[in-house]
Length: 143
Image (cartoon, rainbow, N blue to C red):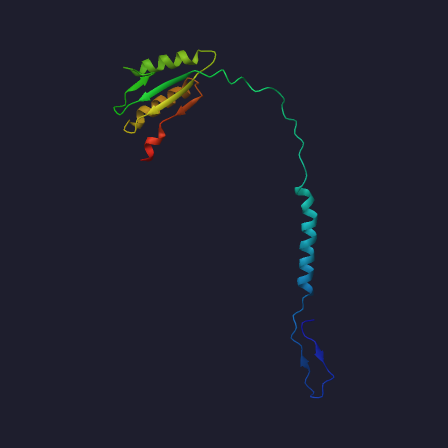
C-alpha cells in the first residue's frame, strides 16, 4: 500500500514510488463528518417549560430598612443611636424577628472597626433569622 513497485523498468532494480496514501486520512475525516452530522440535531432540541403566570408584586411597597453602623471605635449604632451593651442589640434583633414582615438590615462597618464586632453583629442577625442582610459602604475598603 505504501510502496508501489514497477517491474517494467530495464535496470533490474524496482522503482520506489514515494506517494502518501491518503485513504486512511479520508476515512477518518468521513467518520468525523458523520459523527458531527449525527450530533448536531441533538443540540438543537427545545425544552418546553411551563412558566408560572402571574403579576409581579407591587413595587410601591418598600420593605423597612434597619441601619446598623459600626464606627472606628467599634461602637454599634442602631438607626443612629449608640448601643451601650451587646444585650441591647440582641433585644432589638429579637423584636425584629418577632415582626410578621422582617425588615432589611443594612450593616455599615467603618474601615478601622474591629472584625470581631462586625462578626458578632452579623452572627446575631443570622441567629435571630434575619436573612435580608446587606453590608454597605464597602467602597471605603478599595483605597
